[in-house]
Image (cartoon, rainbow, N blue to C red):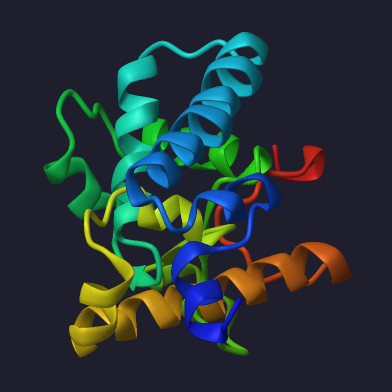
Length: 180
């Protein structure tokens, strides 16, 4: 894989065989990764009052991966969204499942860090690709789109390194028992 292909397709091992067949690639990621994680990991283990909203939250977050998106703006974009605490709890679940998280702005001032608009981030760019509806060649030709894909790819690296090395950079992480 070239760096550009890695940035575009992500790198789930099972999906690499399908990068030359875009429809099959999307179908594999959707059914094997996204649907399995949401339906089997999240919905079976957690009481969710609005499963459709959980899925919409993930789809919106994946679409905006690598971009700033406030919870209030998300409320306006989602149907039957309820309130920000519902969205935040769904983002906790999506983060715990390794699908989507929010990166907070770096600042030494904790109040400024907490008050910043988060950058939503998928854990693998293949999750963003499912909602792009464009081919690799078209994405490379559209420099604005490619910049967003590349930024999301860099974010996936940072998120995975934060998890691996236990950095505290994620906004949407489950609250610890001492925070409750």
